[in-house]
Length: 161
Image (cartoon, rainbow, N blue to C red; front, side, top):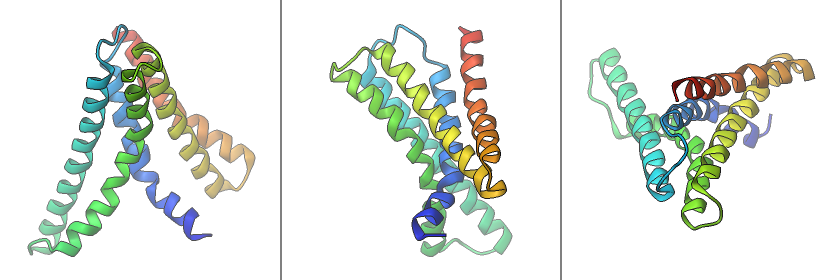
């Protein structure tokens, strides 16, 4: 496996976790979306808060297991793992930022943000299926299963609104 493929695999946890966080945030939004710039900031800020909370929880766990204070090396390692959550926020945040610039409507941005999040979930699910099975059916099953998680959150949104 190449170094790039290894980095992609290592980011899977954060991107999947972050994509679900994005979908949960978007679940609270429904047309008409009034201020896409504000939504972009809140979306990225919310996912950033999830990343920080995850990192802090992992540091707490390490300190409890070791019985000693965390070091800067611990903090760097934990943040290196947690920051991948932010990768999932970039595309959806960009969708709202472009709407704020007037390239398209805020309601279109909401749809695009959901498509990007579900697409990321599907892509990583397919990657997982391919790595485990090494077959097209494994890739498709993984993509459908993981992407289906995002679709489920979208369906909950539709039912809630």
